[in-house]
Amino acid sequence: MLCELSASCATLAEGPSDFAVPQQCSTLLVPLCRRFDPALQFLCKKVRGCQALGRIHRIATTSSVYPAASLGFLKTSGGIFYNAAVHDIDIVSLLLGESAPDTIFSLGHAFCTDMACLKDADTVAVSMKFPSGAIVTLDISQHCTKSCDQRLEVHGSRGTLRVDNQNPLGITEHGTSVSICTQTQADRYREAHRGLFRHFLRTLKGKEPPAITKEQFLWAVQVAAAAEQSWRNGSAVDLRNEAMDSAVVKTEIM
Image (cartoon, rainbow, N blue to C red; front, side, top):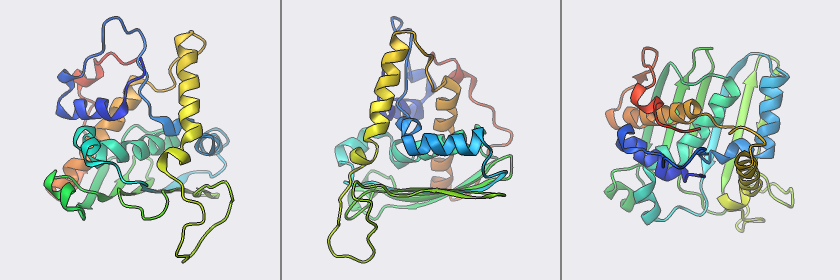
């Protein structure tokens, strides 16, 4: 079964005991679709497989959504940390080969009145330090005026690799009044979604195991929860002595 990510995260946010997998379901694939983006897959091979950058020092991501998600969707998605940040957290963990940071600190604000009424933020900045020493910053916003903004930089001891915004024309604009090539979130990750569905069909046929393990998904959600906790409490969250909730781990995700 291919499970909607926002529903999974929102349910886990309410409590792991509320998350259940149908008994007749032998395989559940959670769509952390950015893992299947060709550019990010290439980056992962260079960073993890070839060690092209040496030891990773810093990772910075920018993720601004266009068009903005509807208020109805945001009410059921679990909020910006579970709907948006969890994707960046998953990719960062994949690049570093580390499940969770030692410490995490978040700042956020609701510039939209409707978001403030939901007691959620529409713009957040998340800082994390991982056991390896790598420092990660996530810049996430539900506001983007002309086109989605999706960038990622990895800085290591041997150099830097960067995934920039992509468009069919290959033209970069600065200060223009009209967008040269408007790109929605769906456009940007179209190939990633196709890759996810191809992978899902192959898992159903038994040709390959699910690429996302239950531990990886649950750790991503747990880190997202810590980021939200930090924002709401106004203080850093220390995860060094935190083990994954055993009740969560027992959730049957394969």
